[in-house]
Length: 137
Image (cartoon, rainbow, N blue to C red; front, side, top):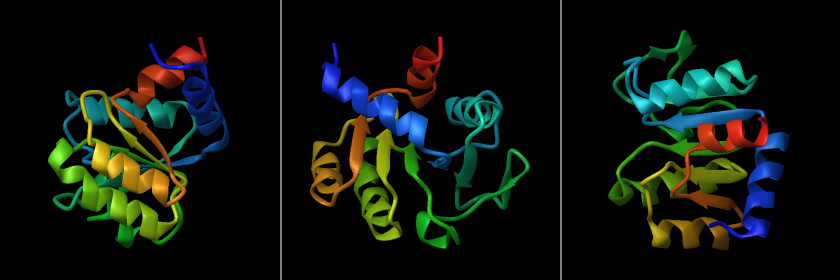
């Protein structure tokens, strides 16, 4: 069970953010990252695909990494293995993102500490789609 302060932080983040970079967004409709990306778009968020192997996903320009995005994003939603998270968090810090969100099953305490020590909100081991739907039910 998450504590009330953490859940309030999630609610505040999801109600004040508009732009979400999805790192590891897959072009395959059956993949969780694609399902989450579509859900977030349907919920009114601007979704920015980040996948170095693609030029477009969900009819939206796709970027190879966070540094290549030509504008600021609010949340960096991460669909990558836990071992791959720290460089993404470093890019999120450099890009001026407000938060990093490690999807359900992704836990990297070192990267989370790095994010928090640099002023970013860090959500870990939760699905952004599930949390948004819970808040809006």
